[in-house]
Amino acid sequence: GAGVSQSPSNKVTEKGKDVELRCDPISGHTALYWYRQSLGQGLEFLIYFQGNSAPDKSGLPSDRFSAERTGGSVSTLTIQRTQQEDSAVYLCASSLVVGGPDEQYFGPGTRLTVT
Amino acid sequence: GENVEQHPSTLSVQEGDSAVIKCTYSDSASNYFPWYKQELGKGPQLIIDIRSNVGEKKDQRIAVTLNKTAKHFSLHITETQPEDSAVYFCASYRDDKIIFGKGTRLHILP
Image (cartoon, rainbow over all chains, first blue to last red; front, side, top):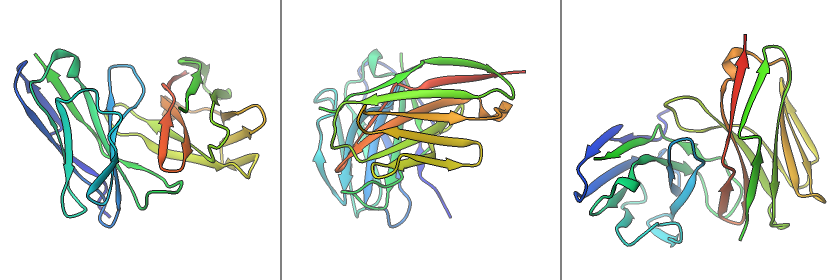
């Protein structure tokens, strides 16, 4: 079946512009996670959704970052007034449930470059 | 909060030899420890996991061991092959939060 998809795969934007990154999770997965991976670094947790609500927003680096999920499916990560330090690969993952150990299925990521 | 340390950051082994990657965690209530493999240009993919009630798990050439007392767990890859070259992440899971290590870049030398 279809896995997690993300779009765009690559995004180049000018400093100060807003960007929207999209994640389509696996159908039926209630949990959705966003991570940031800087060059050569590990996975930095940003936010997760249980259904359409986000119980834990502690990982968002600043108030320029926001995310929403609608219909328990598609999620959008928005970065306002982008800065060069926002350049990274943004990964989305989904899992069947939240609240118990469960495999996370990752998308291929969106590579964001802020010039 | 939970902290996961992963070592080494880079590892080079001769093809056919074994590779070992080690992780430590701080939260004794963590109960699930997955390992992910990330190939270039792709998202991480689960390769093996272990739960806190088990000390060792094996799947073909890959094995994971868990020492709850010492709060560390390790990934063992035997008879390494070129396709094992990738970045490997350990993770520790408690309740609904998962914390990843910083990753190990594994190079398999011909």
